[in-house]
Length: 364
Image 1 (cartoon, rainbow, N blue to C red):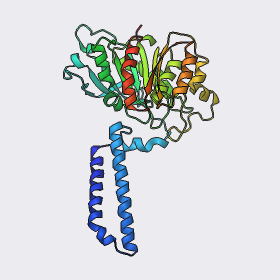
Image 2 (image 1 turned 90 degrees about the vertical axis):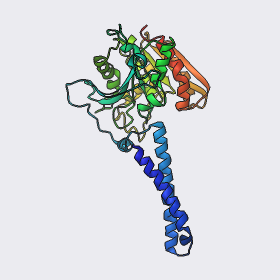
Image 3 (image 1 turned 30 degrees about the horizontal axis):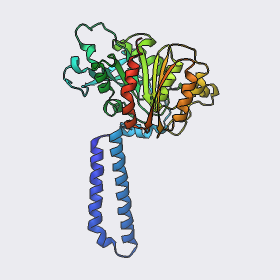
Image 4 (image 1 turned 60 degrees about the horizontal axis):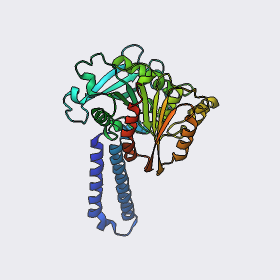
């Protein structure tokens, strides 16, 4: 959504306010026409004020990137990643990370905006790929890097991960301070269709779980020097993205060995933003509840980190239940803040220690 729309909304509020001041003496008269005039001005002013507030909130939190995103909540069609063949990753643009020395990739790294196409799922989605400075430094031409997929909540845009949650800057800082190894970040929304598919292979499509569980790592590995095997791949996210990250860690251990859920959900929400996810498939519905998935989780070397807050988070109880159930089958750690909330301020506090924890396990 462009800045022009916000400017027009603000100008509209100012214009209606000025019109109300100018016309009110005339509209103060008795009669049905002045009454309708007063009602019309008041309603118009309220609508424009609410629209302006909504546009400001969207600009701040990047909930929707376009009017089509906003209107797509009820859509259930599958989006094709494009025709078969060709590159699985197409670079759409590049930008500099917001770190010192940003002009030199050898000092700051690079962020590439890409379109990723999945061969098995036939889905495609945009992502931001952060390549660390070491990726471009002399002597590292053949070096392969561990990779972390980072997911937003829903609704939300991948730009949130770059701008508001500052993942590239955090990764750069931790690596510079020798608190985390350099790694590639692949930052995306937790869906590649215009509704909240919640990393589930919906009967009849779309196959979002297949995209994140198999297609995405395979595609990224064809375009960048990533490590191979689950020990080189992690996935993390917040809210719905946290649910997806834990789901991938539980059900795709052959792809990801490290999973982090920040303020995560533990089962999908079926509502107007998701539509019917299961189409009567009770086995799929049960599998999508992470607590049920734990019952069949094979013991392995997977590592999980979950976060919550003692006050301000609604997931405190299920997070404790998840920890109790998973600890006999895999390594599990947690971050519990005294006070928090379901938003950026909380996640910005949790991301640095979570990434440091991740860095100590990925590739080991």
